[in-house]
Length: 116
Length: 111
Image (cartoon, rainbow over all chains, first blue to last red; front, side, top):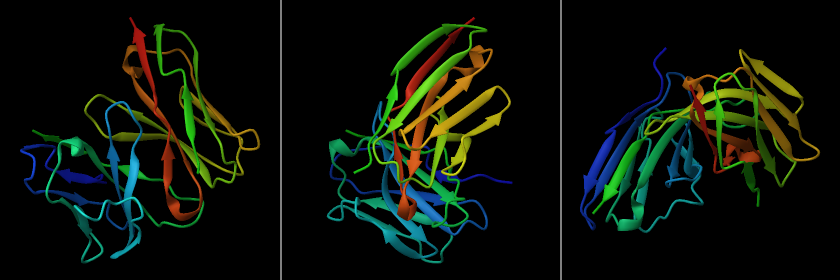
């Protein structure tokens, strides 16, 4: 079974440029998550989708970040414009469903963003 | 707000040693706790998931315990190997499906 797929794996851009990350979750997983991981820290949730609905985006900086999951399968996370402080690893995860205790999250390899 | 702390931040041991990684959390109202492994430049690999009603889970040389009332979990690694070198992350899930992570323990197993 294929895992969570993310692309690109690495991205280097100059500040004020836009950037987009793509994620394809495990087949059949209704819930998709985007996390931000700064160096030496644990991941922090940016947004959670249940199918195509964003049900938890309280920690998404909406002035520059946006996300979509139009058909309830793959998802795109966008930053426009990027700032130096956005340099981090962006992780995508999926789980069979969101609520309920039997909910194991599976992570993709991440996209490492460097903003110059 | 849930806070997760992992101790120690870094650990270096000789090959073959048994070791314990610690995780504590401030809010005991959790659904489950998950231990992950992260290799440099890679994503997270799920190691063990313990439901709030469980006391421990085992997978091979790994054993994770959960004491929800005291807000603690431990990850026990038996007979450590150089291939176990990685960062180990603990995460708890409360309502709403959000995982709250600790900062991790960086483990080095020396041959």
